[in-house]
Length: 221
Image (cartoon, rainbow, N blue to C red; front, side):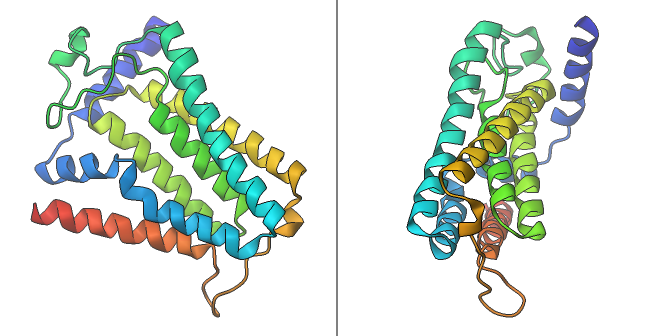
């Protein structure tokens, strides 16, 4: 355990130390919750567009359930039980070495990361739901970068993110299976909008547009 703890710390210090003013601004916006609302709305559109009423209700319910279970399990069960201080927490001696952006330090405990858990719960559920490799690849990459932003900002160790991602993925997969029991996947059929794009691509396109907006905003501010 000492070896893994030391490795976790060294990996954290290595990646957390790689900062630029531009990335500071970019990651602070990227890690936000509400900036991704258009992408969530695009996912809801894809579900409503391609599912029967029963399948749509089951899918939306189970997506919300996956995120709630991941968040509550990691944030309210594991965190108090483990009690691992965030690297940016002033009570953690490591905080003197951590690079903090705009004074942001997060809460007290950070193991596991709810940000990673929630992101991967949504990403895995979406990847299993849509019938598009490119959308699945995009949403998984989004979850990875969203998780990495927490390390960059100094509020999570890599181990926090890894464990959060594992639990989030498990809850995402389990809740997708539940939605399939409630309403079989045969009721989902992604209808092409035109020759090369599918309805589920709206999720990817909305996400790319948001990333582009964050990139421009970070450049001009």
